[in-house]
Image 1 (cartoon, rainbow, N blue to C red):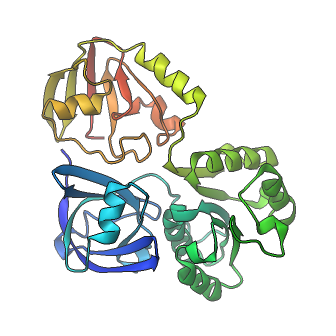
Image 2: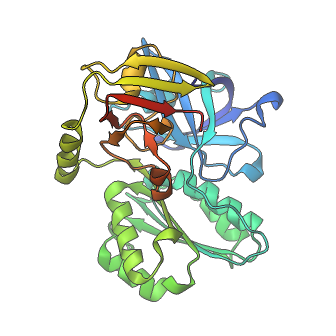
Length: 357
């Protein structure tokens, strides 16, 4: 069952013209439930018109700060982001699901580690939480941030980033890349490219010295950087990423079609959630488990419905299902039969999935 709690908005302010930063007040009795790791996110829910709208937003605060803060960047046509930026105000109450997500590595205070991070636009939100937490928890560790924006005015959390640079002046370095403003250093102008990543690995950091890398932004940027860093010698398991937007390439469209061709009509589905079973038959109207279950009356956790946030993750106990897209689960989760229910198409006549995992 999807667990949402009403939380008070204790503060809300504009970090840029397009982005509101929301601070949520978590009452004492819920603080244990809302404990989080750096890089995790919250799912917010609101009734907008007559529509139940849910969106996941990364926590930009650090758990060490003992506060819960998210940034919502307004997107053209974005139902929730427009609501958050134009309607929500201090003193309002909004429904929030406890933190979740796997975009983090545990801190090791006794070790000296070298981290790098790449972010674009609002992709800075989980990265900021990660940077603050590791620098504060690991006194000998270093962090280099490569941050892409349109122009200086659009840089999110610029004051916070500069404050971190001053506080950790010998351990934290920031490199701003801009697409709409040109500066004297060509490397810093325009988007990340293979040539730029190659320059960074040759002149700015030694790939062999990197312990962990975090990347957050659009799909094309993430996969470009990931591939170039692997080619440069950084092990695959050291590169961690989280997508904010999913792509829709011809290759992906072909894969989706092939998955849908395998769909078995009338699959008998059993959902295990909250220790209880919910049974329904997949309707022809829906191609994925989540939509089929919601239409049948189930109350399940979900947010993006795009295969990005992993809020709807569950485990296949019996039968089989194949995902149209997957931007959230790693190889170890796939081997343990985890799926994203919003993308999972049933391919057997019977399917049992467990959300209590």
